[in-house]
Image 1 (spheres, helix red, strand yellow):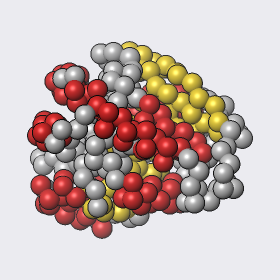
Image 2: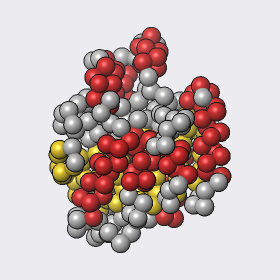
Image 3: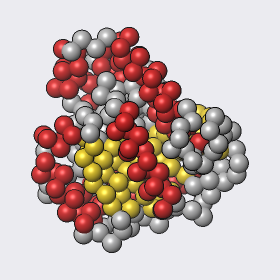
Image 4: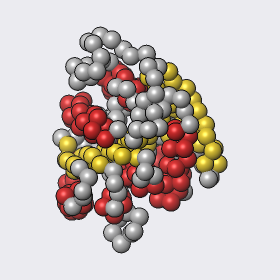
Length: 293
């Protein structure tokens, strides 16, 4: 999990803001550039897309978000839950990459109850500005019930947009603290959310908790991709086995895989970003969405 110990480790290793920035630039280029895996478009072409900042009402107030969609017509939608550093440019880049594959992507500000996004420009600013303490205070409000209510509001907003094909299923993906949020989104709107992915998600197994993500997975109709980082698996191998048992017992296809990357390996501005492992996870995500949305 992304915790104070990992932040301290990165600090001890002397990762400067410049080094963080170099990782972010390289990762963003990889996320946005046409690559061979993007078979939908000719090499060197970039599909036309529109993007805008949006707001919509929730049970707790007004959520702000970022919406990106192809201009070619109504598309299946994807809800993206950011990691602990929130809605920022690297998450918008992931949404743009999704739009390039034909999906209308909505990146949510999970901290809207406290402040609009962006709170931090990148992970370097989060790590270097006391971000952990601020995030911990804000995320205390983000219970399973709160996130499920937010998910219902996001789905309702998406279904009203002309860029979204409301006849097709919705996907959702979450990173770090957003991993459980993706599972709760699938549980909150089972008639609409047909695929959910968690990448290095924290707190997926919460024993003796009826709203634990692993319990919600067991009763969901969605298909799941659970990407576990190698260091998270090393710290809690039992959680990985619980998730594998849940996946094996489900009627809908579900995959639990430990990837060759540490916590944060899929996020371009993270010091743990691992392009090869991220590409493998991206391909699995695209297969999931192609089959279910």
